[in-house]
Image 1 (cartoon, rainbow, N blue to C red):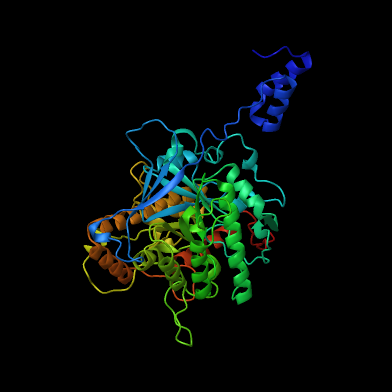
Image 2 (image 1 turned 90 degrees about the vertical axis):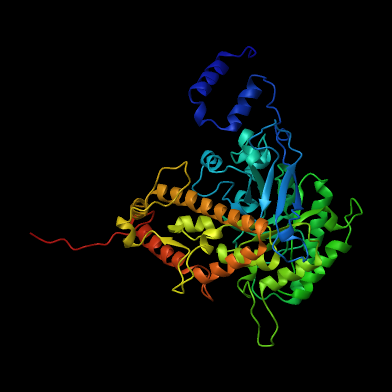
Length: 519
């Protein structure tokens, strides 16, 4: 029972009960203090993050003969105390797989309940800490939350077991050019402009409500063509920051180190060697001993060098893939490999085939859903069974803004749990600027990517030769991103049409002024 309260407090309490939906947490705390109630329990560690363990699946067709062969793996979560559940069993994610990128903890257009309905197996979500750091020298809102990070983003309780949370400083496709970092801070861009985030604050915020996987802080230059002195400074700072993170982590969170030194291949190799040489100030073991995986960020490098093979005027190979190859040949092969910023199935397939990448943080699929593109490409045995006839390359998806879909009543082939939505209906929703169009497209496209990676794993588990043939056939069937462009042609045309509809019907729309006839 509540302790005796004054008449004023009773009136205040009645107001609280009637209009409780509009009250904030600070008013709840005020009520607790006024009535001398016991403080709110600290549930921060009641559903703490788990440590992730990556292991390679030693299959005859994917044996680890080389550091760079395509491979099957399993990412398991340990340390979570949860009831036995025969339906889901032990938390485990098979790789290669796509990591879904979020905005402030939410996948664009998908609410947590819809996300849970559309997810039948374990998935990984990527959070960017910068989304929560909108004000300089102000902690993110989740730091003071009396519950875990998973609960904060709406994935607590029973649904939490289906999702692992990976957190880094920036988005996977962040290409913003920022002021140089300092020895004790990094520059970030937020909704309120550019400001500095202290390294100590990054570590404190990240470990206050730990994710399952934490990407280390790196001093990767954002300006194109940085000098060697700047790259050397970034290497030293990144190692120092990683050492500090390992010291304060105490083994609670699985740390993935972001590889720096690019675009200089010598410095990339030097950074990887230092991971095996430098020791932690807290344990005396090498930095690499405390790592669970390695991450490579493509976005800062796309401005200067291509992702795949390209030779300069001196005949030297300059590509991001060659830098990743150097890193993987230097580091341990039994650690999880993450790529941030891969754009589309062509890049994903080539990175798996040539470099043996395990996880891909994907901003691209949500951008497609925003632009009005529905993925229609096929991969695997379905594509191998198609008659081998030479013809024009097909787009990977459909631009549903185009007028030809106004009377196209073919379904989008959504998952069975959703109603049969036709292309004509989505076309209508897009041109009337309805949010539900992007919701349906988001569900469809994310399921298309999940089916894509499932086909990859199926081929690798049965016959590697079939996987190589499927990749070759895929490149011969579907259009890739044209040289010098950042997007597929179907994606680019859809974005242009989307802007046109936005100007007519969206926020900030403009109206054409027509002269009125005088009677």
